[in-house]
Amino acid sequence: MSCDWDVYCKTCHDALGLQDMNHNEILMWCLVRHATAIALLQPLMVEDPSCLIELKAGKWNVIHPSWFAEHLGHELVAIDEYGREGTNKPKLP
Image 1 (cartoon, rainbow, N blue to C red):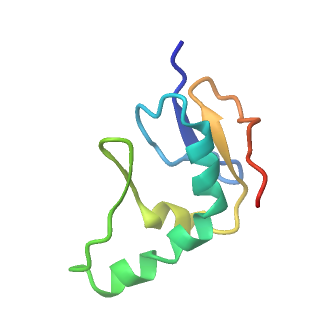
Image 2 (tube, rainbow, N blue to C red):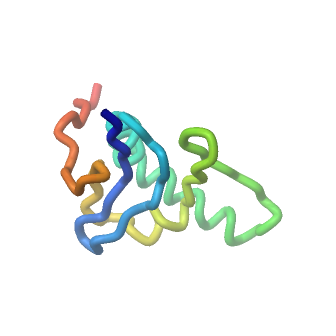
Image 3 (spheres, rainbow, N blue to C red):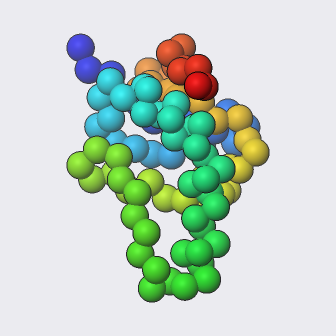
């Protein structure tokens, strides 16, 4: 059975909007864990729009640093297509 995943901000009730991320809960938690690093790319892209930095998840999902910058310091979680918060959050090494 398929189950797509996304990153969700519990503070703002807003999702990143990734599509077709079937069985990718662990990747979503990885994005949550590195949210600050992703957000820190945003000033570089604003300062010089010719700077093309593209992060992708799956075949076509572009991960926008601006979303992470907007939600910096908020409570981010992995959420499935049924609205359930993920329970397989990996432990930090």
